[in-house]
Image 1 (cartoon, one colour):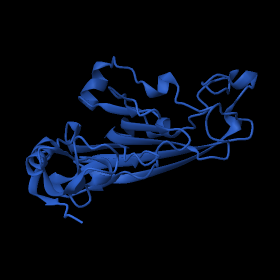
Image 2 (cartoon, helix red, strand yellow):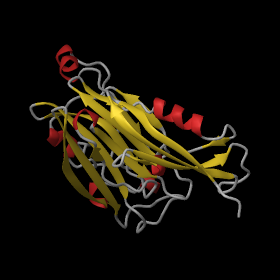
Image 3 (cartoon, one colour):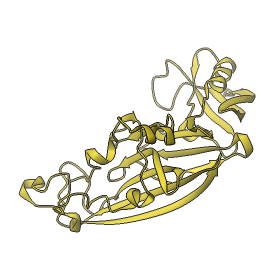
Image 4 (cartoon, one colour):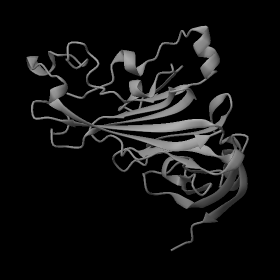
Length: 272
């Protein structure tokens, strides 16, 4: 059985009191589930302790909210899982304190998984990115729930300096498809806003052949260097690793939350 965040934990209330709205502005939260489904909602501020309590002990009866009679009638409780949690202050951007909460959940011997990995397989991992909005009040702007190894969870990071500072998170999906769960934000006094990569993407599309396509995020984007490097493949390629046209190299800078291209170069593949 895969532990999941209860409905009341994952989906925040969208009707906020006036005092709450004035304190958090127009913040938005990104929610990524293990099936790569992405949804958005308006986050609600809570004390840090609210975000770091044991996620498996939210039911007053002590039962998991996934259902105490799941798995053929076995009553699963928090005792059937081992939870580890790491809370890290990543730093500040525009006077907003940013905290990362990584939660790892190991399944115990009573847990039975149907059609999934064995109990001794990879643990479930959750990533939560919190931003301070007042005295010991935080909103969650990003939540990734990876069950039994669907994503390779790592730490988010703060990149750049001055007005070009951004927060970024990038967690590769399992397998060789090259997919990931990633997101990037810039900050001002009003809150967090997604970085706009449109100008960079437009410049790259103008530099590569018209019959080509490239990967704009995940493993190709290196925010620590403000650099993108991607293999360019034919649009009509017949397989995952064929139809290569060359490689695009692009450098950019962050200006008012926009990735401005500095240099873009396409390097064609040479005939073998």
